[in-house]
Structures are given as structure tokens and as C-alpha cells.
Length: 377
Image 1 (cartoon, rainbow, N blue to C red):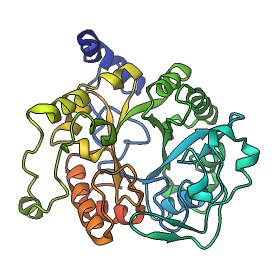
Image 2 (image 1 turned 90 degrees about the vertical axis):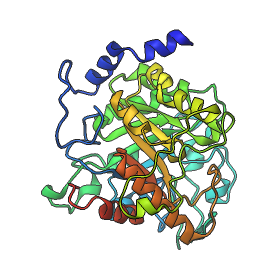
Image 3 (image 1 turned 60 degrees about the vertical axis):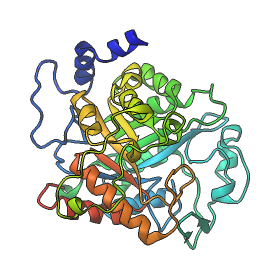
């Protein structure tokens, strides 16, 4: 274990990863218009502010992971989206979150055991019940192929950019999350998504993340130039520590005055061990990752800086969470949920996290704009 952690922290490995990201082999000078971290491409070039990604689209008007939801995220000003990627029995990549289609469609099919022909016949429910409220869509929508989604948003000639002035066009970004669906030993989704992104020429618009180490390793082995990242979820770390790394959801008099939150990072016990384990980035380096996707409850006062110093771009999730199945602090009162999410968002923006993922893209775009007035878009 010690040797692995030592290797993970060596300067030569950090240099290799920085070169992979196209930042140059010897210069430490960062692009002055880029967000922090060495990750320089469409995700950070020209951006000083935190980017907003719609989680599963982040739309309250259209069902999660549908093309319509992603288009809506773009319309409300989101910089991109996170979508879930699963592979069918016959090797097709689909944008879908659950292992079973029952919750979203009303019909029960296991995605990994079904063909694309079967899944293509399904339509989403007209209404879906979430923890916060039931969302009514008024229509039913198909499950999309990931290739169709990416082609639609490929910058700058995809259909999504039609009617947008050339001067206003900007790459719409994707975090493609590979689901750790059963069987866990099946890693075919890794090379399949890597080959697709390479074929479409969309490496600069895409990061690939997962909670599954093997799938990410297959991505890196298939197309090493792609940006991939490990996902840190407090649903896993709770077995080591039930203490959150911060309490940013609390109303703080200092924060209300615009002063940074008090130091709250764990200094002892299991919580401190969890933070050390995360921030040493051993798993990330073993994968060959260049980005980190981390639940905001696992971020303390200097977690983002530590990852930036190691050359990683950092994304955090999920704000304004409507689906709280994997959320430890469950809130069904919408007003309280939004108030607490805004407090957490303010702390993430202050720590210059590269992107946030949200179930309400429109609300988050507005909140980030308010927090970052004067910064570029």
C-alpha cells in the first residue's frame, strides 16, 4: 500500500498526466483565462467561473437522460450535462440511469439483458415521482442512444447549434458516467464508449467518470488521451465514517457577510482518514485520471485545492437533488432543499470547483451568475 501511494504522488507521474492534457511538458504557467487545475481544454479554456452541468440533464420539464432534457439544459444556459451510460445485450450504448427500466417507463426490462430493439420501443412515463415532488411532463419520450446524443451536440456543426450565431456558439460539455451495473465483471462499456468518443472526435467535449475502477481502466487502455475520472460517493465512505467533511448546508453568519466559511475539515479519527485517503488521489492516479467527480459532502476547506495542485479538474455533485435515493441528508421540503443547496454552491464556487452537477439546471445557472458577477461566462 505504501509503495502504491508513493508512486501515486511522484512528480514524474504528475508530469505525464499534465502532458496528456496538452499543457506542455515543462511549463507550469497556466492559461490566465482558465479555471484552476492543469486541465486545459473546452472544459476550462476561457472560463473563470464554475461550470454548470445538468445532472441527467437537470431539467424539470423533460424526463432524465432524454435528448429533450439535454436540449432544455442548453436552452437555460447550462454549460453541459451529466448523463448515465449503459450497454445493452447487443452492445449498444444507451443514456439511462437505472439497471431496470420500471421506474422511468412503467415496463420492467433489465437494460444489460435487453437488446436495443427492445429498449427502443419503450417510452418514459408522463409523470415521475421524486422525493421532492412529482414531475409532470405531459408526453412520453424515447430512450436515446448515446451516439445520437453526442452527434446532436457535437461542436460546432451538431443540430443543437442550429440557429445560434457563430459568435455565441460554445462547446456543450458531457460528463459520461459509466454505471456500475450488474454484472460488475462486465467492462465492455469502457472500451465501447472510448471508441465512440474517439470516432466522433469529441475528446475535448467529454469527460468519462465512474464508480467502477475496472471500467475506467478499460477506457484509459483503449484510448489513453481521453479525460477520465474516479467518482467519490459518500454512500461508500459512510462505512468508514458517517461524519460529513463539511456543514456548509448550515446558515453561517460569516458566510452571510461574504466571509469564507470557518475551517471545518476533520482533523482526527475515521473522518480524517477518509479525507486523507481521498486527497492522496491514489485511485485516481492508478486509473490515469485527469478529473475527479466528488460528492460535495466529501469536500472540506482545502480538498479542491489539493486536487488542483495535483493537476486534476474537480467536479462536484449533486445540487438541488430531486432523486435522493443515494443522498445521506434527505430533504423533502423544496424550500429548505433549495436554500441549503445555495449555501453549498456558494462554498464550492468560493473554492473554485471546476464544475457542479445539479438536478435544476436553470436555478443553478442563475445562482452561479449571481455568485460570480464580473467573471467571464
